[in-house]
Image (cartoon, rainbow, N blue to C red; front, side, top):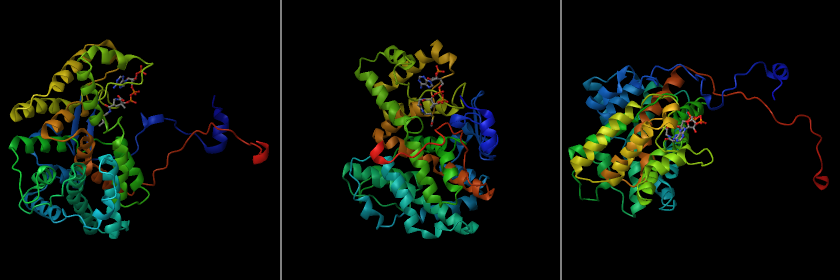
Length: 402
Ligand code: ACO
């Protein structure tokens, strides 16, 4: 039991809120979400409308700079990003040392963090607006190239360089799936599916990885270091890593005879650590609007590509059964953004270990926007308090007497 009077003596009153379930860490003007109504907006624009009408770089600009860009501003933003897509060849030296089967998220966080060594001007916490812009477009430009290196390494294939005549998503897909000197032409449906997925993942206010980016950045750590920390936070299966875990779970169900009820029962069993991956959300207690869009997109993409994936039927069966189950109804557990996204990624040709990296590629503009907002608002260093419950006043015992 905690003796409150002692706490007051030591440190004044402290709000104890494990997991920050009810603690607002900042004021933000970037993303609005209403978990009860299932509403998500970036800078006031509905996610559904952005997913339908915008390009990914328009959304990136909106998140970072607060407004939809004019044609001229967008053209400049695009060409500044394109100019930064090549990654320093020296980065390949240490990249070559990663085992080819090491997890893509570990490689990604190292490579992004390493950019600070190649662009030391980013270490200055008092960069001018223009210098900061250069750091931002540098990172947005290099991220798809870095992701493609990781994919190519996993296959043992040579990297494909970015091309001047391709857009951001075309370039990314070409570096991922193309071969040297032999371009792959992508169906519009494929490029559009990637566009929608990246936009839907682009920001989600103060989640685990975004809070990490802000808290690391609050010490005046540079952008690359802050984003690298966010990538590590995203990796966990309770956060972005869930998209990989979902497809593995669906595969397990399929290989186990397709009995979804058996897995629902496992998820409800408090003595079993198993959770239904891709279900539940800290904030959404009605539905996740991103999951609705992604579910529809999964149907469309698979049909357009002529892909028949039996796990899509298992996913739908699992969702239906869960939505009718009192355990999930009582706890307001619904499919989240990760539930159907992996099915699309797989139809596009990605292996499951790449899924969370694709999430990071989409989330990058949100992380940058949040980092910039925190800087622009001159927020203090993030430093939570604690309630100490350990031993007090112990006598030191020499090693030989312990
Ligand atoms: N399967 C089974 N039971 C669940 C699940 C699930 N997926 N999620 C929550 N519950 C249960 C909990 O056991 C708890 O039950 P209790 O009240 O009987 O103890 C209750 O629902 C509340 O769950 P909490 O863990 O307290 O909710 P919290 O807000 O802390 O966690 C989280 C949210 C981490 C997303 C959780 O729902 C979960 O683990 N989901 C599976 C992983 C996942 O899909 N993560 C991706 C989230 S979206 C994203 O990060 C991009």
